[in-house]
Amino acid sequence: MKKILFILIAAAAVWAVDDIPDDYGAKDAQLAELKSSLDTIESKLSDNVWATRYSNYNTFQKLSAELEETEAAIKKQAKNAEKVLELQKKQSTLKEQIELLKEFQKAPFSSMITAPEIEILQKITNPVAVIPGFSYIKQLKSEKDEYKNRLEGLSKTADELGKKERILSQIVKLSDEAQFLDELNETRQELTEFNAAADIAKTTYGVYEKRVNEAINRTSEDIKAQMKKALDIVIFIIASVALSFLFKFIIKKTITDNERLYTANKFINLVNITLIVVILLFAYIENVTYLVTVLGFASAGIAIAMKDMFMSMLGWTVIVFGGSFHVGDRIKVRKDGEDVVGDIIDISLLRMTIYEDVTIVTVNSNRRAGRIIFVPNNYIFTDLIANYSHHSMKTVWDGIDVVFSFESNHKKAAHIIKDIARKYSKGYTEIAKKQMSKLRNQYSIKNPNVEPRVFTFIEPYGVKISVWYMANTFATLSLRSTISAEIMEAIASHDDIVIAYPTQTIYMDRRVKAGESKPIGEGGEEI
Image 1 (cartoon, rainbow, N blue to C red):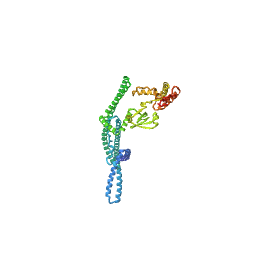
Image 2: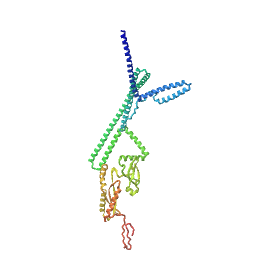
Image 3: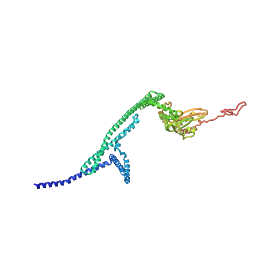
Image 4: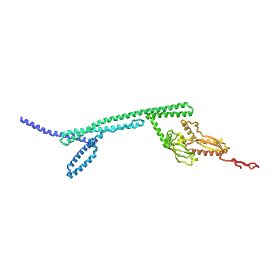
């Protein structure tokens, strides 16, 4: 019996000895797996901005504690000059490092969990401010998403630290190494800081989200109100314009007199524009009376202090909005008896710039061309300015005068001249007819006939035939030269037509009786 019991005890001891290496092998494998997981988490946290900030904060605290110890050691080693010098060098190095990490002196996450400032946008009161309103909403949403993503990074970091804490707890149970226990304590302290920061961030984000949503809702309501107001105004303007066209159509059918039709159209336009301006003023200006008062005093002051400049700016307004002059128009300006004809090449706030071309004015009067002439805008109120190409007109009346002797067949001459003028101005006449039809829709023109015209007048030295025809607004001299040459050539082939010039006819009689006076010529002189 004792022998059997001994054998069983020996076998159990062998089994126990065989089981010891297996337990230790499983423990090492588990420990290695835990360390591998720990390295993975450490790798993730190494590039994490939150972990980096806490590491800097922790470093600052350690450096501060070390600096205090060094300063205390300096006091204790005051008699040992060599030791004091060494400690002072260390103290200087520590201060420099602490200065670099000064921003981490207090809570490590205070700057990162602080919500962004919400800019207060003024109330949207007009359609133009709608665009900045959309930009404001987009900016708030972008800042909100950015802040949310930042706080989510804090939560994820806290989760990783929780995993790290659990792994270190298991490692400490399986290993007797002191470094893991120290690391576990540091991780728990770090996790406490992160959890506290996450709780604060959660509360802060809730308040910030409500403020952002409130600002977005307020701005959205303002935008909707302005869009609705703008839509109502657009509908009103469209209705007003449609009614004006309807009234114009009705009066065009009922009024046959061109002058009355023209006046009625102008009146409808005036009422329509006035109504639209009044609606816009009352829709977007809170105190119209205050605006009118301010503008009245301001205009009076400007008019007194800078009369000419103010009048030029007012003239610019009339030019631009009145549509009387445009860049490219050919105009004639008369100032102090001198005429200037040229093309408008620029219209600025204070003046019109004109390029002087070769025209009949430069040929007969100035004998100069190509000058750049500056005409103040206020001239439209005080001096004569003629527009040769207003309302896109491309033609203008031009005329040639030819004087024939009294003995010439002036009817035949008039017929020849009119045929020549009609031949060479035919293209411009057709253009003028189309333009005149358009011009009559805007102005009351009683005589829209643009066919060449011939007039006959009695002059002291003969019969003057004046022919008028349509020519290119910007090239009248060329057509005048062509027609003049053709008239000279055509007249030369007719013997019964003679071009006249200033002459005197003298009657002489050689037989003079006694007591009679001498013949007297046309000039009243005795011959």
